[in-house]
Image 1 (cartoon, helix red, strand yellow):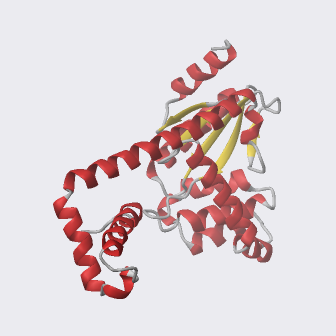
Image 2 (cartoon, rainbow, N blue to C red):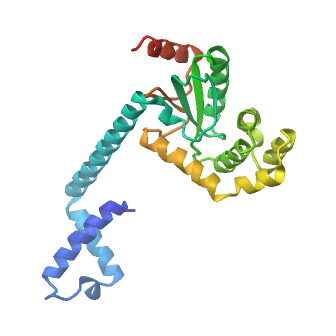
Amino acid sequence: MRLQPYLLSALVALLLIITSCASSGQSANAQLSDAQFESKVLEIIRKNPQVILDSVQSYQKSQSQQEEQLRDKVLSQIRQEPRLLLRNSPVTGSASQKIIMAEFSDFECPYCAKAHEVVKEFMARNQNDVTLVYKHFPLTEIHAQAEPAALAAWAATQQGKFWEYHDALFEQQSKLGEVLYLEIANNLKLDVDRFNRDRKSPEAKESIKKDFELGKSLGVRGTPSFVVNGVFFSGAPTVKDLEALVAQIKAGN
């Protein structure tokens, strides 16, 4: 049985109280070996299963409420000022920046590749009304190439070629890897030495980390996810879905 850190901490605190009452002021850690300590913790769990379960559920509920409050706060700010989504991220589309669609995406995610085709068609039809901003959200736990691809795309951004590099990564998703990253860089006539320096730089990692943290604060748990003027949704949309949402925003709804 593996205990979550917060639960283990609570049990340790409880155990210290129990043992300190019987230790005549001596340290509990000094009296219990590791094996004895573990045995005591497991004994508490066996004797108080419902208490432990209630504590876990209460903690999870509290965490969920805190996350929802933070998300609502951030989305409210974005509804008031959509340009907060731009920051230093690559953008394309309308220069008016009145309707801003942020896409949180992972270059190795197959659903993101499908969404890429939809977004590309949507932007071709609505580029005069909508500003698209790309946000990196690499799911590194399940996609080994997600972060390296994001770093490579960030490096291409420094030479004004993000969108071309972005398209090439999605179009050749099955070939993600070092060979492809350099091949695309050469095809786009990037300064490869600078490209290599940039993608390995602390600035690259920090930029992607900030996108990821922003996504988490907005409730992003998977990719693709979108925020359009403060309206959040996940999953690959259709062009019709996106155009209906834009129409509602234009109508002031």
